[in-house]
Image 1 (cartoon, rainbow, N blue to C red):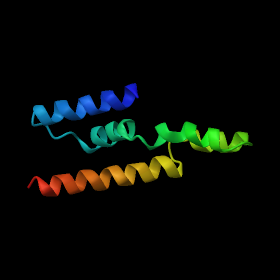
Image 2: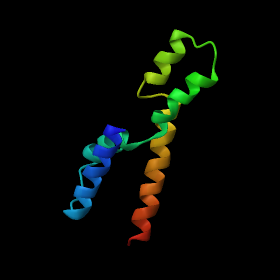
Image 3: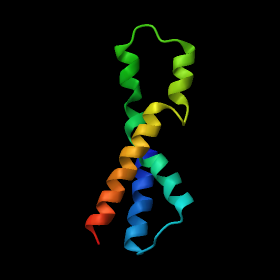
Length: 85
């Protein structure tokens, strides 16, 4: 949660400073701000037998949870930017 809050503070700073971040900065920051992976511990409580390979896949930056969270976040940001025009 600390990383998520820091990422939100970075976004607030960009907004207050009327600064548009470079694409690399923006993507790096939203990786830290997505909350889907924070919900992963619930998966461990719901599943009784978890294989080591499953744990490694869930910890990967390129798993389905991270990537789908990124798509949702990008979609929401795009919608917000369209509404502000």
